[in-house]
Length: 402
Length: 100
Image (tube, rainbow over all chains, first blue to last red):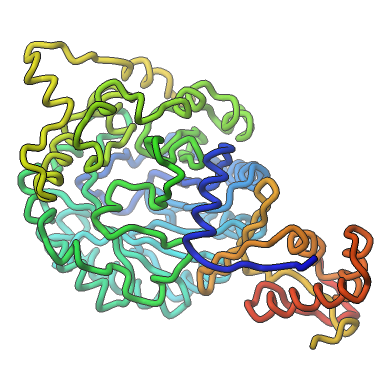
């Protein structure tokens, strides 16, 4: 008999992901505490009103349920989390329950005192949205004059208090060419970053934010940028982070943040070992998959997680069985998202234009002679074929939350 | 070597950790390193609660595993030392235990 302790990064994480995916344990939870926000980002998919957020007591009950269910990685987000007056109470409860805690924030309200409180409550990492290193570009997206200056001022404060910081830069028409500036900024600060090409429709399915999405053709210079493909985006000591098993910036653009072979033949982690909880207690497979499985004001988390038909149906999906995508010759270049397939293509199982076009460009850049996705091939073969409208209306009705 | 009777051991309260099925995963927030325990390590981890010394933990090993007291104490001390060096556990004076 020998009692042993193993330490490491990817191998342990991979095993953990494999086990939790196989057994459908809710390893990772994204919990939006509010949709209220002090910025008005042009591409945001949320409305910013309070439609009846969970109370403090309800939030603490949710955390109890999650801990009992085995959830370990907990990301608090919004909206802007610092607008929750009970944020510290919620963080203290999460600390007592031994969660690994990350936050997403615009950092406008960070002060040394608040950073110290975050540290006190065991927050490990803070992800901050930075759209550009140029104030006019960043502030035009957030619609808050001076916001870049305030956000950047917060980063050294957080670092000084021992918190890990990561920059997140969603790329859209307004800041498409700003990514190199954000990369340089991250390097200067010694923090990791992620570039995100995903702009999602509103949660109600309306497409307002999509008007800001960069066209696939305009993304070509980004996709071709040798700096992105050669770079090591996390040059600091945090590169060795056990949780930071992130692929290079672009490759992770539409990822769940945790990559593993365990997801082979699964569309993603959503509903398998991760989920999203709205400020109103709705449980979704993912923030990008507006298909509520239940509400925590009425049901216990475990009852929803293990018995909701929406989740059971999602868990049965295999990429090799997708009606169109399974036949696609350039599938390996595709970062198809089931939620976006539902919201943009109307079919959780379907192909959708954006993913197909991006996959074709990536395949072309990789040297594939004439890359054409299965969706486009079928359209060429039958140009007047009706694309099934599928289940979006049903699912949207299904996801009504109160 | 740690003096077994001098101190009680408790989990570092700054850690994130979870038992998921039969596995115990521990993450230290300072360096983000992820740790995993084997079966006897998990048994000890469950019992590290701020009210037990290394000798008491070893005694529990003897009661629950087929192991001699000497080996149990050696193993318990070795694991506690390793965990201590990684700041996963801390000591409190044996006169005042702290609840986990």
